[in-house]
Amino acid sequence: MGNLYRFCEPIVLLTLARLGTAHGYQISAEAAPFNVTHAGVDGAAVYRALRRLESSGCVTSTWDTSGGGPARRVYALTPRGREHLDEWVQVMDGIVGSIGRLTQESRSALNAGSHRKASGTRRGA
Amino acid sequence: MGNLYRFCEPIVLLTLARLGTAHGYQISAEAAPFNVTHAGVDGAAVYRALRRLESSGCVTSTWDTSGGGPARRVYALTPRGREHLDEWVQVMDGIVGSIGRLTQESRSALNAGSHRKASGTRRGA
DNA sequence: GTCGCTATCTGCAACTTACATCTATATTAT
DNA sequence: ATAATATAGATGTAAGTTGCAGATAGCGAC
Image (cartoon, rainbow over all chains, first blue to last red):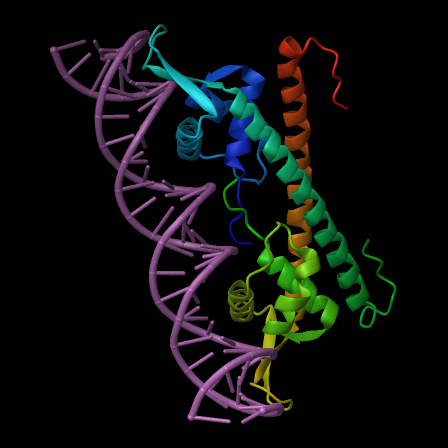
């Protein structure tokens, strides 16, 4: 079925908005319920998305070396980040509408095409 | 907002299903109402999708040199192509659900985040 | 011939992502 | 002390889809 965008960026933004602050490893773990495709969000993609978002002013980061284990880069959403998530909401609304139309039309076309051969008894729904 | 997949393949399949037979240039023109993003489907992308679909047995092609102008490669859907469109419908249904959840949660998170500052009077839907 | 429209196809760059790999820190076991 | 493991971040390479520009070619108008 080819590759589909996994919407890594909005998932990261949303997870950050929900958690308040979080580091990459944590986001990667908590993002699971929002996966768009069967495959989960790749850790590497999360880190890259966070870097991109920081360089565009959507998140800020500080190093946290207080706890045990390796240092964590803790991220927080900026106002611009919240705006950006809002923009994503608009875009995704549009996508949902468009893809919805696509599926609806596809179902119609598939049903219309199967009239001839199926001799009308197997209503597939 | 970065690039998003334009769902060129299902759009091509659907347009073919609707028209019965069609050539690339025609599909490229008739596909406009099903665009997923603001940008239309690129002609080059259509031709490439048709080639891919042919090599995977989803469409067949024959040259039509009857009319005036350059020869047209006329495509038609195979049964496998119809199945493939049906698979796309399943996938896109899943995507619509997932992205719908994403937008819903994003709206909630954005509203929850604005409680503090907005002094709670602007109930945004 | 030259211009413009139709029609197909190719080249190159951009973007997101998957997978593997590498580094480094702290804890635990030997 | 050494080794293994879990945590945490980052990079390199390849794959796949797409946008844009342009090449090629047939046909009609001038």
